[in-house]
Length: 119
Image (cartoon, rainbow, N blue to C red; front, side, top):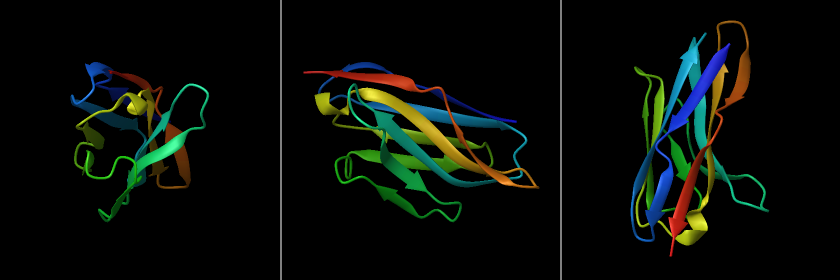
């Protein structure tokens, strides 16, 4: 089994910064695509940013230039640096990873971490 654990959420004022971290553990032969999603109250879960094993990343337009993702395959971690936060960034943020365990690939989710931005 594979576990993803997020940390780093919290309450911040508009214009502030937070750094989220996601640590993957368990039976991991290879981490493929890793991503951050978020789900705001009353809205569907949406992709924030994703990065391939080759390092190619893409960001949602609404966070481009404000959020930066970094991946460390030696530590099996994925971080999300969030700057210039806005109230509309308030959501539960989830880490997602496609993991190959040597036999098959599967997608895993973390439990989520709350980010709240006050105006």
